Length: 219
Ligand code: SAM
Figure 1 (cartoon, rainbow, N blue to C red):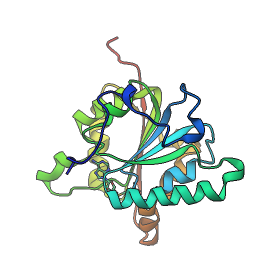
Figure 2: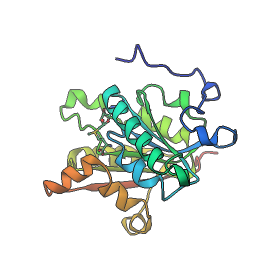
Figure 3: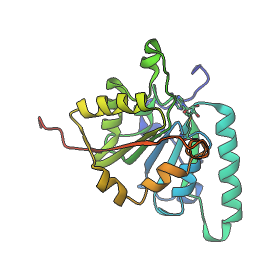
């Protein structure tokens, strides 16, 4: 349940300095990458050294998992203290299906990730899926024009569901497979997370779909 989750009334009310203490003096610096349902944090930890000037946040609803990722990042910061490594990555516990607009301003993000989200197989559980028409409006709001939403899953039915809703949304445009393969982030989307590694071990399929946030065609 969410009753013990803290969240700001507005993004401006949020104090991020405890997450990124080395950036505390730069008030202009904002989170640009969000990994929704980040699990054990493999993606953000792989991307942190590749985008050393970009602030990134893993968002996870399970408190035990959040604790684990927190310790993982803390240890990495300690071992890379000389180079200030991993100061740009953090983890927070939150329910991304409820409070995302409380944390991010309009057009703040350049990348948002949904890696191996919970499939919620049964029809009556589909409303619990993290990609839905209502939630897509929130993701579109948080993403800047040209920003990218990444999805990957081993569950074909969920892939088709996500593609259907994203294709139908006026503010998202699918990126071709050829263009996806040029994106240096995509190999990490496939392989960096714990769930991605598990699918690999089981030789499962991985269905990738990436979308660009486009200008509102009506504006
Ligand atoms: N992305 C990770 C990976 O690829 O290894 C984790 C995948 S796991 C199947 C899905 C994760 O989403 C779980 O860790 C779960 O706790 C988290 N999650 C589910 N609903 C969420 C929500 N509403 N807000 C934040 N995280 C959520």
